[in-house]
Length: 331
Image (cartoon, rainbow, N blue to C red; front, side):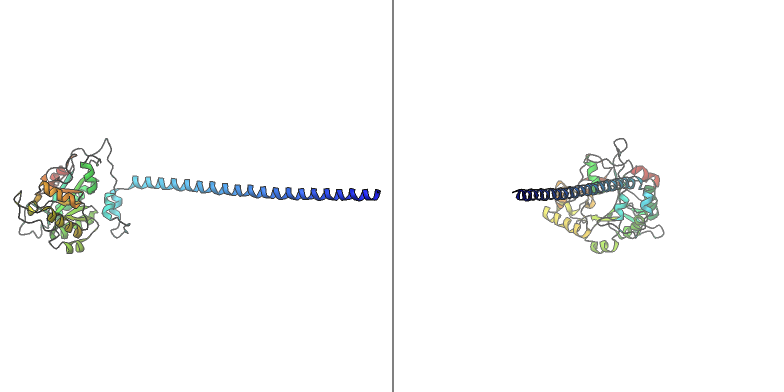
């Protein structure tokens, strides 16, 4: 009996040792699992904090860089860019010239109206045309005027900005001007475009597209002068209003078809110049239905807030005007 009791005691002791050993093994495994979990949490926290810090620093750098670029760009920066620099997708160097930011503020902005200058033809005094008239400007006089605008940091608003300005939705800098040339004559294309390329200043050429428009657009395509519509084939007689242009006598559908064709050839439909400056309410409706942002007449004054963006006046430039006269017209 005593021997049996001893065996039972040993068996119980062995069983207790096995249970204790099993408990110790479970505790060790549990500690290992807990440590692994804690280690994983620490790693995730460190990674998250690192990513957040990097994102914050990157955001700060981009923000500071953007502010610097916007603050530091000057017209000299734009003019020093080589004309062969790569142009970003969708942009042109004319956009770069206009990218001299709109600096208008509530305290300092244009309050005396925007001069939309109306030029026509360009000539060289060394070889004057036989039909020299008041619609011409000598190429050196043109260059003198453009140089003045550049040296005095003039801003050249887009047609969308012009519309917003007259509708009262946008302030423009005190020194702002728009430059337009009617008809798309060879004299302007040959002599005028090089001036705008030289000074990297944007301008608009209102093109009569039925007058070899496709070839002109192809041959004279450039980064600074944009071709806009002066109609396809409506710059001709046939009406009884104003100068007698046919636009005022055409049906709505025929007029819209003409305008849409001209837009297709020009490659732009932002602005339109009424042939001879003639228009009626029906003409304005056709221009609107063709999708133009702005349209200009030959009414001789500055564009003011409250003007109809599809019936904008312009300031006429004339043969022999002095630089002082030009400055007085655009200031």
